[in-house]
Length: 239
Ligand SMILES: Nc1ncnc2c1ncn2[C@@H]1O[C@H](COP(=O)(O)OP(=O)(O)OP(=O)(O)O)[C@@H](O)[C@H]1O
Ligand SMILES: [Mg+2]
Picture (cartoon, rainbow, N blue to C red):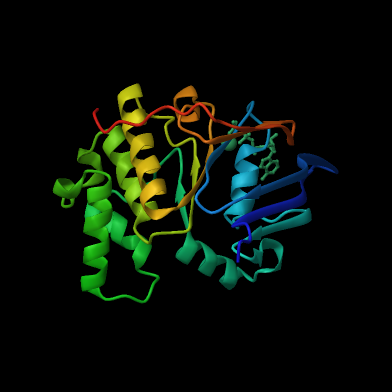
């Protein structure tokens, strides 16, 4: 069972463009082990989001195989891919889309409603996830009363509350100042260490790159460089 958690084999993605086609990903080959903390970087339009969406089973390759937790993405039914996402994949997006009329607690709890658990079990999980991101005292607040950094932390709690195997984060720091971005990256790195969750980012942000153990450079839909970062920044808990 030392199978890789994500295996991308000769993946090509084409989008129809008028009467022609646009090739967003060209013959990508990548393997990820459980517990990796990696990311895709590269110019706008290089294919970062397209690749994250395929890994998250929000999209399928045109050619090649994307295998996530042993399942081939293009062969999953609508229901099966929804199940894979609901159980095993957490998403953090640039725009974190909290539901404004619900509290912080309820926004995080939503991620568990599709699962078979009791209200008590959900409460334990939600409060734990809010503690991970330091927002346990804000459970009853509405999103409009939060700062941008706090909102993004709620989005991380929502992605992590089901303890997914994989978290996919697309430009999670885009709306944050430096201090908040570092705080969030430290939280994610800590969860990666404690729970062995696999994290994959798409980012332009140097601050995010500092935390990554592996940086995959995309250019024109191809892997230009696959860099394992050895000189690590030492993490401190002090802010
Ligand atoms: N649904 C779609 N239909 C047609 N073309 C698309 C679609 N999604 C993405 N593309 C094209 O594929 C290319 C790669 O897009 P992608 O969103 O993956 O880039 P990106 O690296 O995430 O860029 P950014 O840094 O701006 O977020 C772009 O040229 C984009 O226009
Ligand atoms: Mg993108």
